[in-house]
Length: 390
Image (cartoon, rainbow, N blue to C red; front, side):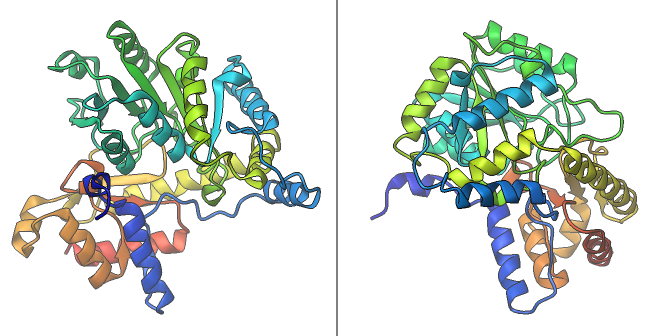
């Protein structure tokens, strides 16, 4: 018999959809796969070459420190200083095998059985399952804000004070970005209530229009604090497969994470760490090129999806690279769909279009589309959506 903890959790809907789509493509089926948050750009050459150089120099042959190469931690520190004019110490930085592992490790370090962890809906699919694996109680808050952003009013109406609040800005899947004032209010509330605040900032370099990204690093000192920052190189540098992320926190939290990681991965892959050093310290032109391209794709999709019958977009996203749109209930009833899970599967089988449903993000009735794909794929996806929702 398998461990009961496995029965508590659901498979990642985005990874499951992506796997199914890739299997169909491998079998020669013309699938447009917009299921995963994975840039279609190649990892910049200078970053890949840094890994190759490290391999050839045999710098990758041995273990590193559990919490990452000193050089990579220093690169995170230098990047933080450059971007936000905030100074950190190396013992506040924990390098992990992807930002997902940083989040998982945090749940294991912070959450005791029965502890309440909250986040606004919609939310990234793994938050809920990671809390369950820590035997915590996960609760999604439906914000009163029309842009799916948690407000001080929402927090003040809670019946129970949580142990942990997770906030993702820019948000996956909604594309919402919290303003400086909104973040200040939430940080102030968590401090007054003695609540841990995890700020997932993995999409921080991907904001559009006149939107300004505000990092929690600029709004709160992390020393002697319960504020924790999560980030990594996967999205902004097209390095999803390299699996390098990090947490920035008070030394006590960082040390606890390192203790646990010592029994999980020993250390992140060394070649990937050298690649991440180059990503953070090398030329940043590629980041802006990708950001501009994502913004162009967003504008195209928003304009074209907005005129499709039976779906609606609550607001134009201003960050990350997703559009989260609502399906008309009458359309679902008319065609016999019981959920957007059903619609997601119908789109895959009938239109050969892979996009996950809102159920996995804590918001049934919606679908998430990633525009981190080529313009040709997005044009074709629009045609297939238009045909399906006639």
